[in-house]
Length: 173
Length: 183
Image (tube, rainbow over all chains, first blue to last red; front, side):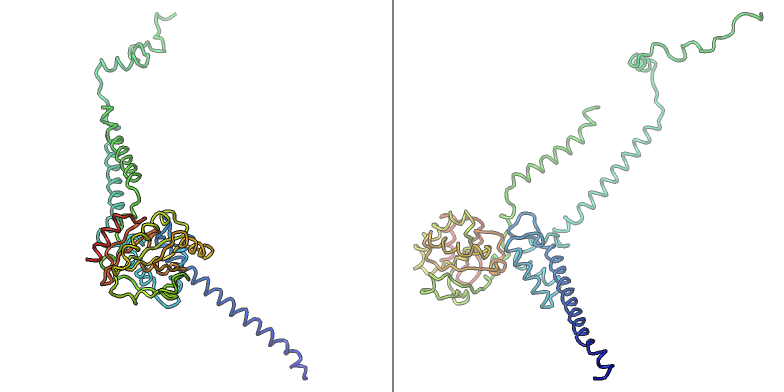
């Protein structure tokens, strides 16, 4: 055996191991990617036998089977729209957690936006009115002023109070 | 003036309260959802039958073999209490109608494998003589758009779904639907 062959003969098994590891990692990555897609689609579907739970969140047998069906259909090359349509033909629009953007379902999509816009407009209008009111000078009648003074415990108006600086009286010393 | 100021928040709170009470009192809205299968052709299926039905119906029930036969397709599970309530009713009506050309089929579904054997106990307990099988992966349930158990589908002789009954069947439902199916 030449020295070059001796030096490289261990390379082959090493390369085989590296290749196997790479293949394993690629397969694992593909599986993880597939599972992620399954759960992404399952998150859009309502679990039929649960209360307010998605197919992604539920551990009910029917939800598990629905996830398997999603996986099988993804592997078969079906698109997300096709898979959702598959369940829609069996359960109707009810199966979709997000109502479809058509017909009466549009109310569910647009009503919150409309309500939000109206609410902002109402708040803006009220705020404008409040600001305008706060800038107004208050006209009060003497009776009203007297009532306020009595409520605040002020017996005399400041105008009536004697000045703190006593006026000098008397002539030069 | 004070009352006027309070009026708007009061109306808002009352409206929210009314909505809350409505939500509490409206019951299970899912029960009001009609099956998309109504008036449509019933989905075909093949299902392994429990041993006790093999002599009369064979090991596998094939829906397509019964074309032209009105059918009552009942989905149940061994853990489902209302299923225990309706099983004697189904058996009673099967006895009455088995010679009139209607076929009853029971599908044990939405169960985990460890409970599959409970199905045999259930069938023995009620002595159900119409064919019953097991849907291990809930595939048939999904094809039939099942929400839960029990649910019963009434299929006419043309293979169209006449009604989906959610919850345990009652004698009134059975009388009405069987009469309609046999007309």
